Length: 234
Image (cartoon, rainbow, N blue to C red):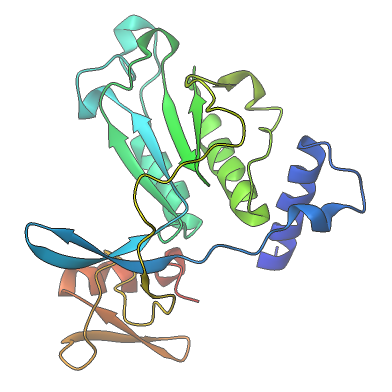
């Protein structure tokens, strides 16, 4: 299936789940938010940081003091390899970060995950079957495709809940003034670690689909060349 066909399928699914009338799909599709570089101060230095659209936090006993993945307590093992494989296969690195974490604080509902996407926190519970892993990424991709939050698919509906209280209606107060973007052009960003690379001094490069890709280190180049399609460099 082509990327366009996959996108159309996700859009149709999002339209169905969000009760948008057929023919009004265009109302759902917003201008995509491109990742961009901003400059952030830390330790007296300034660093270019890539702003992305979200992050998936997966609770796992292997990564901290928690119950998720604890088979003695009736939880299924957390299949970190499948999470990583789905994330890589879909080329989500520059849009949705994946992190394995310790306790998320809702142990009785485990296995747990927290999807923070498009400014919203979506809590996922009772993820005790590997079939939920691709479903979570399908859901995230559907929202990235249409540019807004949509209801979960039927397979996830009973596994999504609201843990945080809603903010007052219509209020979203930025904590700080929005950083001035350095650029929306990610041509000189290492697609593996997202570090900004100076092309004049770059020692590690590769040619891919008619463009030069710059890397901060040989390890990033090796990881990219092992599976270029997993990195969103189109």
